Amino acid sequence: MVALLVLFSLLGAVAVLLIIVIGRRNHAPTETAEGLLIEQEARLRAHESRGSFNSRTAHNSLPTMGDSHRR
Image (cartoon, rainbow, N blue to C red):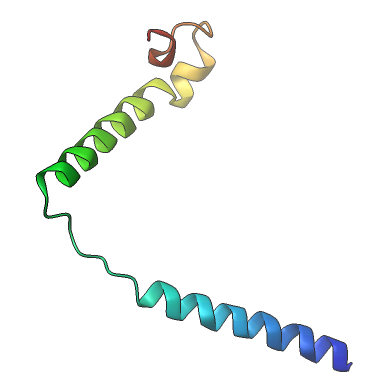
């Protein structure tokens, strides 16, 4: 019984610690031009990936037809 209480108290402590760490993060927007360009490239890659790897494309085409194989 004591071991179970120790386990749950440790899990609770870890959960509280994670909440504190995530709550204290700085969510400031990127201000430099280089950071903005990096974010823009990441958004474009994510957009292309969503189009290349959606369910219709993955199940109705040959394995070499996706955008990732054209590089």
